Image (cartoon, rainbow, N blue to C red; front, side, top):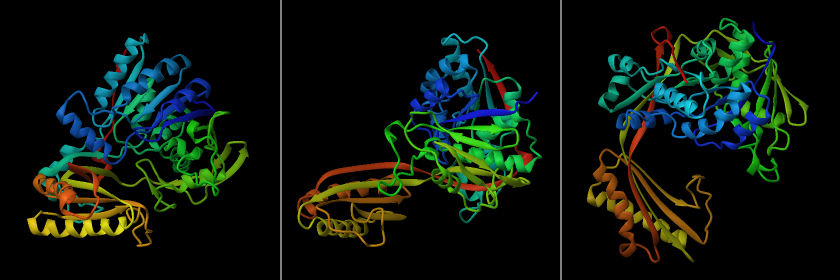
Length: 445
């Protein structure tokens, strides 16, 4: 038996997001489901590296904190949770949640892990063309750290069908965190491209949590947003026909109106006619966005077509080292002294033979963000020298040369910082979907 409506909320828009708005939604939002979206492009590569160092690690570092605060509120209210906080260790994350449920006195609490996104063995055994840079996966050689396919909502639906109270995934398409509960509860078929398209619209609007409530929107005097310090997170009331009304808790900060929803709809969209997901090729061109009351927006008209035959796969790989050094100059002529410091560093790197593949030199406060050459002449500037190098030794030279400016460079330099770190890069490829299948593992407290 499917239900006629569903209320689903957004609990996080990225790994480090605030927890209080999510807890408020669970406690006062009358939710059926809450989704935490916490996995960015590089996050899973970093998680794979963490798991390589510690087999018990690899899931979202805030998973334990979030679940210890969310479960005591969600479980008694019957609010089911869906999240991609499993990252590189989905099974470990599910076991951790089960452990927490036992400690909290929640016997029988069911946590499902959706796996199948880890396709490292498949990538290492094959040779797949890269879609965002020249070459193939084999060209990356031993530098490959991880390979994860973007799964759709199918595994989430399977897990909910097995009675999971919390579903934890690794890499899935972000809207799938919301589409899964919608398809499961409202009886939508994966062959119904229109519903898959409209569900993807809803998921896309909710996936960044506070953004659709005015976060990342405010521009004082142009687009004002009230009380951003108490920004509320959104929920959607969704009918079986796919029509959704977005809202937020009364008294929470922010705003939801046609302007904030339209900005979020366009977020990270390349082709509105074909927003490619694992479940559907979503079509946003006919979406209707209408004000339905104070902080209430009605969304309808999402469409879709058959999903792509191949799934996107993100490959994380080591790409050398990054060396950085910074130093400040203040007072009259600060910008000129900063530019002189940059000239000195460029020449020094040539003299000492540093192996630099990519060099970036900025005056922070003048041209570091807007590089069109329109910078002014502030009272102080900070010089930033950053380089990508093939070896740690050359990366170390960058900061060392900046530090040497103390007594070998322009007048009045101070506040040097320096660092060296490994670079984890991401490349993408496509793999036939029939080679990649989701699997569900259930843990019971």
